[in-house]
Image (cartoon, rainbow, N blue to C red; front, side, top):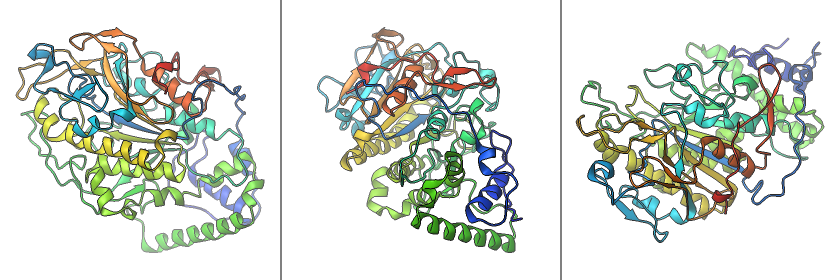
Length: 505
């Protein structure tokens, strides 16, 4: 029997990827007789089909790009400046006009100001947990505690929005000839894996099972720039790729690259096996063999057909001019790769701007050195990459069918803390801002309002769960769809979230 060596990670049935590929290889290649059919391993109860909703913009988005700015950008210096507030609230940064009459944003976002006519800003995001609750922001879980922030597999967690989309996509009937593309890709690396913290919770499939976790990329480029320190007490200087990286930097699927300690002989065996798969895949595609597969066989087959994703991640196929336009930073190159991924047919792409080496050394959690980090690093990098992504999608005719979410956990305290060197902001979730574009989102709109100091919602509060429900709606999924929890009870995937009609164009 042909065995495929590799990761021992297990799918939600308790089947390892190695076993899955062994079974799948026998099934698709006809190499012998498998005593257990692949469908037996992958069978799932079908989710009852939700009735088609005939509401505005339902299903307008073919794909979604989620940008998560971990640590939380301050609303006053980004999308909700307070030019008339006292200095200790307004801070050092002023407001500038945008190309939407009457709408101002922070002065260090001049490029974003010129694409505001393509964006909806929500200035009334609000929830009760002023902590780094990534899981609360991106899942339907109803309550949150910091105790599970570093426990991705804690049973309290709910499925990541990308995993929900993946789960439901795998259950819908497929059209004849429809290509098989992974639905849920996250980058630039496994969330939190490059810092001195444990791996962080949030973007995982929870009770849907590990088979629906994002397919993670990794990045091989080095940092070229020492970014401003988190505080004066930080001894280590960080060359952070989010601040600058080399053109030779490459993305790869994290579970498909050479493994440390892999001998040349074993690598050659794997390469031969891959070429056999490729040969059989070409034959199957020419003879339309895939169209006769069961849904479960197709799911297994799709794990073997990731060439389109690999090619999309080859950002060196882009011109040097385009790469520079996005910015030669890890965030910029990730945004470029995300655009290529949605062009390739990937349904849900996530980019996490998270800590590199020292916790906070690259993220937005500015409890000290607030203004140097914003001025010299965070805002200029974000401004260039984010504005280019929106403009590039629009120029290619992709923005109307690509939903772009730019979110975080919370915002900043209304008053700046002047005690630390460089000043500081602290956690605040009573009101903060987020931005959205494409896929049925209105253009040039501001939703909600904060009070005069940017401390509380003045009108129209929006919860993170509302954003998740609106995302499902725009992707053509019933926002009240249920998924089975750990004891196989149906739960609404995005909790109590409601579609926000005021965000839709």
